Image (cartoon, rainbow, N blue to C red):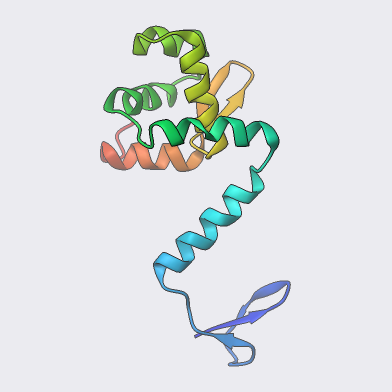
Length: 126
């Protein structure tokens, strides 16, 4: 049991207690919070890329790992993936809309969550 006090940390005194959520509910709540925080008109259009292809390829994961070393612009990522720049920009903006990447002055860079995911794929060696 967790004790919840509005605006404060959990207390262990038994007041205001609720059952701890199972992991699925917790991840759904976190995902909902993160998703709603990114909700904008531009993001709604960018998210449409996932309707067409709801996956990330092995090559794209490789690019994400390379982006951990230094940010990449859409033109560079397009060259690395062998795609048109407009198609790549749509993909990158779609990744921004769901929190995989963030825009920085030098292009696109993986978010902290993406960096942790990529590190888990290679055993933390990056």
